[in-house]
Length: 148
Image (tube, rainbow, N blue to C red; front, side):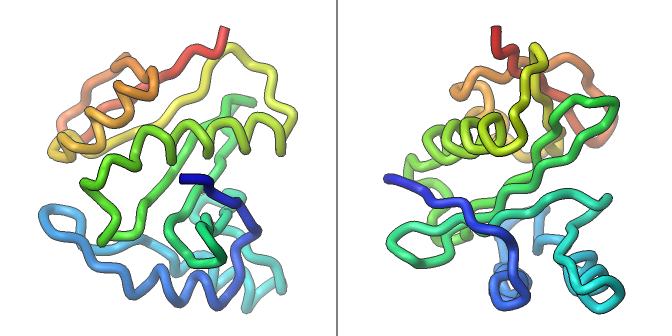
């Protein structure tokens, strides 16, 4: 499946806000998008990240967020709930990484993300996409993917 990454809009954020997941994760934190738009007219996500709606055949299927801390790219992402568990995860993650590298002209040696320790399916997807655990906390696992 091919994914298209487009800048976050109010309409996309409103759609994502309705997504509900089974298990420990209930919804996605999109309130910062609404707040930043209200305050500045720009769509910035949690922590001031750059958020992108992910489309397939012009339909919203996911969210990708790019954070930069100490010049290291950190990812936040979500696949639409009804698409979870259908074998799309690895491709979704890889395309999101490739988009971010090109969009932000990223040249550091690794990227990172954090995942809830209970989210076993996501951990498996990230491992298939080349991420390795480097710190385990009580609630989450910090993972890195080395690019070269």
